Amino acid sequence: MTQFDFQSLPDLAGQRLMFGFDGQTLNAELKHLIKEYRAGGIILFRPNIESADQLRRLCTDARKYALDQGLPDLFVAVDQEGGQVARLRNPFFTEFPGNPHMKTLEDAWEFARITVSELSDMGINMNMAPVMDVAPPDMDSIMKDRVFTGGPDRVAELGTAVIQGLQKGGVMAVAKHFPGIGRTVKDSHFFLPELDVELSDLTQTDLVPFEAAKKARVSGIMLSHIMFPKLDPDWQASLSKNIAYDLLRVDMGYQGIVMTDDLDMKAIRHDMNTCIHRIMTAQIDMALVCHTGPNIAEARDAVIGYLETDRDLFESGRTCVKRILAAKERFLV
Image (cartoon, rainbow, N blue to C red; front, side, top):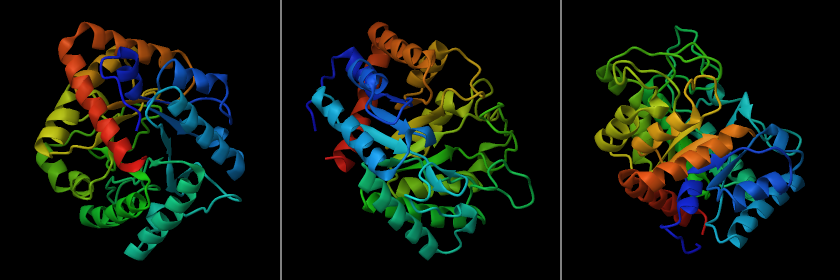
């Protein structure tokens, strides 16, 4: 692992950001994100993927370029849940029907075994999976086509099998969408959903799989863009210190990487500067900006600005980056 400069504001800022980009090669845009913005990670979507050979070359070139720029190795992430959310598809990759069709532990292990082999072969080292949300069978959950079927204990059992299978093979797993969106019906890509339940209710249901994921040493947990007014009346989970720090870090004791969902989603109704301030105040390790556009530059400039002007955010930011580098040391070296 490259020696890291914990005094460099651009390096500290960049490691806390994961970017999407256009193109299928190590093009000028991607080079700029890595060299100038000091990106901690990149995330791949379907337009970035044409074939297995092309994808392997893209991931290999991007990771090598980061090292050549004196950076730690890149997180290279993808959403490969199976079913409707799978960026890698036939004919080059195995397609699975998705979590609702995963009925046994053997199914979960088989999914993890094949998926980790294919991702590793491409140079992808982080999977934004598994979904650990709990969706009641009697409601039209927005997650009904993406969740493991059954109650909290069953979701926990199958989800942790996927986590263990992925991470045993060297690919980091990211459990999502904390603290649980299985009981929401609106899509946060387009709306700001709300789940008005007590913490005691969440503890008995939605948080059970995330507690299991923590015990399985899941590498990352992704926060949802959902409002939980009983937990925080002002801020959605992805911007909430009450949820991301007080609940997840302190009460539940999770010490892995905490990251936002994509800040380009329509559920985010704040300017990027406000979002970054909330993220840094909540000691959320990584912010995801998944689409080319001005939000990328605004996010990076905001992180640097707060590191430069707020000593507390600078010190907590160093702690966040240490967690990120610990995960890279564990999985990428």
